[in-house]
Image (cartoon, rainbow, N blue to C red):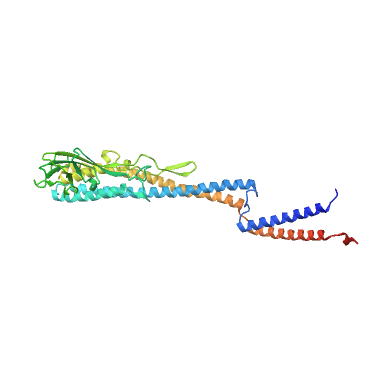
Length: 371
């Protein structure tokens, strides 16, 4: 084949460009610290990099999920332990109130402590993490409990927000301005030493007012004050890897109001009612139920503790190991060996200079060199 000047020049340009491209690629590799900076550089390795990056991203998200789950479980554990502590305090007060040696005035003083504890129980029931209620199921934006007040006579209302326990209240109008009340189903009527309590004024015992614009002598009205669960029964599951999720929430309905015998709001209401009616038998009957509530709280917290252990072991032994392994594989594929790359760059620069010198020599040849 005859080698023409065109072929020679084309080859020179080709080799010069190839050497320049290799130098440019090595410079980019050293500057970025990555062996592969473009998808076209190495399609097979690029596919592996994309897969590993996706895997690391997923592991990072699972790690964040585990942190969220840990906070949720820790907050729930703390809330349950606080609830247990309050239940223990209620049992101590109830035991004291059930003794024969106490008089009525002393029991009424203890009733104010029960009222205060009920407020604290409601604070625990409405525990939140950054505005998300932990005992509301899926309805984390909804406060799990609210006070519902119903009346058998629409002409009468009460301010029931002052109570954070359940109470069945009856009032009986003495005259058009005064009433007496019962909190034990009509067995005991409290009438302020026969004078009655003034309508539309705060009752010093109840702590709220009975209101009516048309009170009538002889009216009997039943009120029901109930702490009602507003959440749902949704399980708050958090994914901790691609094959496993963990239920981290406890439902307020299951913790605070599972049934009548362990409904802490009902029990507190009965204890309070027994104290202000001086009913020692009514008070003492709640002690066994307080024991049941404590057992129930401990059972629920044991489940939380088990999940905390699972989560901690999972995080340490699995998630971190998977991320470390994937990161190592990714580094082996794409990270630049700087020393090796610098050596290759020096060699390529020498080759580039040699190619330029050869090209200069060839292009300077003319027929005069042979005369």
